[in-house]
Image (cartoon, rainbow, N blue to C red; front, top):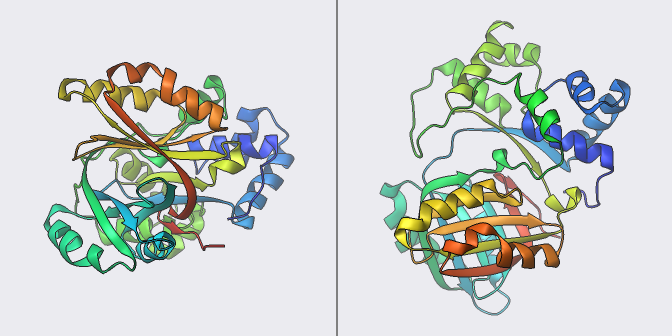
Length: 320
């Protein structure tokens, strides 16, 4: 991705796309109170440079979070091998005992093969710990780090269908047109209705109706993929927390309310909560991990700073 902090207007445009990735530029300009011409120039330029991408993703499927401990200097090699898999959602290098962490799309029936056959073949691997994702607390498409005010977010949200929440791992049979529509939105969710109609064979009027239905059913989510550092959040970290079983839901709810939590899930294992956070700096990370209200019910917390990202939002990030 392209490095460098985005300008103030560009960050606000990204914030608008996080709320509604398919909102027309003129609507975004009206909500932000900015000249339509400026938004119409800066928005497409952001997408064209490749540093900001708006993608369409299906509802979250069954996944497994894997922590890797490798031999000296082998973390990047093992992490790259994971990043090149088609079924990995994200892969980070960490500063900590576990040198890398990743989420792999893996239904329960494939778990034995993943743990017993595939992970042991990773180059340089010393130990791998796998945790099954039980429930997503927050996904990347729900991340709202405060780039817009509440009124601006509400003005964009009022144009959206009520959001759906498909159960984890649920796979519904889609017709050929819906499957083609999801595929067409996979790498560019801002493709116009005319283009989508041509690709799918649907009528132009049917395209927005089907997109709204897929979003309402929870089978399509529009996600902005951007390096948080470009938005002013230069430090990323992975948190693993434990709590008494009766308190896990309360801690999860606290994480969901936290604007700096980029993604979070409930998993199996001795640390049943995992979250990735993006904060402005180490002082903010310190405050988050010592003063947040949800910590009152946490019995143990592990924090590892992200030192490299090889895949994010399902998109491979070429190493330097």
